Amino acid sequence: MLKLIKGAEVFAPKNIGKKDLLIADGRIMAIEDSINPSSVYSSCQVIEADGLQLVPGFVDSLVHITGGGGEGGFHTRTPEMSLTDATLNGITTLVGVLGTDATTRSLPNLLAKARALTFEGISCYCHTGSYQVPVTTITGSVQDDIILIPDFIGVGEIAIADHRSSNPTQDELSRLAAQARVGGMLSGKKGIVSIHMGDSTDHLELLEKVVANTDIPITQFYPTHINRNIGLLNAAKGWLEDGGYVDLTTSTTDMDLANGEPRCCEALAELLKDGFDVNQISFSSDGHASLPTFDDKGQLSGLKVGSEKSLFNEVRDAVSQFNIPLETAIQVITSSSANILGLTTKGQIRIAGDADLVLLEPGTLAIHSVIAMGNLMVSEGQALIKGTFE
Ligand code: ZN
View 1: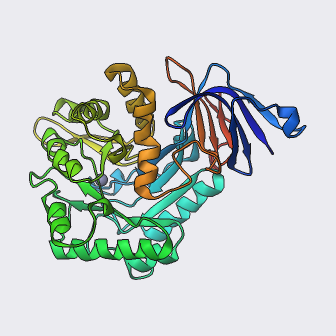
View 2: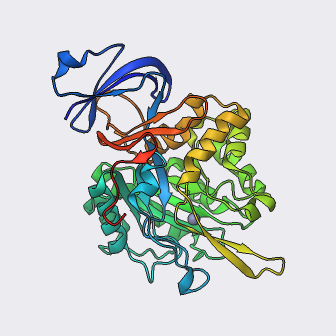
View 3: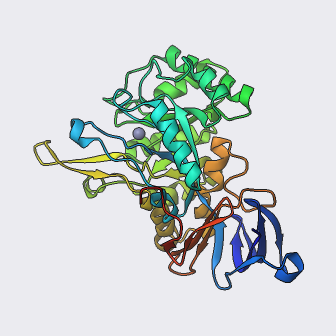
């Protein structure tokens, strides 16, 4: 069915003013100052959006879609996500990853969950591998996984600078990145190497050595959790100056913030003030990761689950608390992430792009409606379509 969104202020993500959008077959067919529905088709569904702001559907580049964690024993494995964890929070594109545990969780399970979410209406991709090197794969090689499995767009998150890392050598990481790069080239994908950054003070040194000593471009790597601490955030500035990408994690705990972790909105304000390009910066939710908290004696005192809701909350706070224009702030969860991942039909409102869209209420920036691949998933903040078991 054809859909016409009438009269929204469109952020593509640049603000292009008040427009009408025509959607057909999951794609954006026209963007005009005014489109008359009767001139299009008599049964065209019209969504009146006068007074609302229209932004691209959000791209969350790192989510533990099958659950993550388990670092406090089997009972601490977090549950898998549901469709509305994404859609109610404006997320229309996800990248699923394994994480620490590639023993009790598997890539076939990750792939099945990604296909389930895609069947239910959003766009879900995955990375092969997990924290560890040597890397776990489906076909036996990272390169073959990326070439042969359409859902797999990269590898990771590979953990470095972390006590949970498998401590890959520079050579191991170089070879891994080469496999992802060639796999991506041969299948028309980016073959991005997602890197989980831990708390160690060597920060990005290993990645910098790989880039300095090979012909692999810095843009092959996508380090995440960059706002984990001030030291890492500062180290990331050199990486950005060299043209690298950085990803900031929106899920956090009060304990982490009290221990000095900068919030994403605050870190973004600082990076933009320092003159860095928003196209190199993204946010991801780390949704459904486990977020352990520890007491004064360092004992595990509680566990929380990473929230997809945090993704847009941090963008909203970047606008309301740090006066970053919406058209800039929204890029870190739309065009920046889509470009970094090589998802060419995502993250922008443009003709022939996928009809993944979010309507926001101006002022509060509350999520009003969410459209994924042309289907209305959320209207007036309520889920119209739910996951199979919701
Ligand atoms: Zn991680």
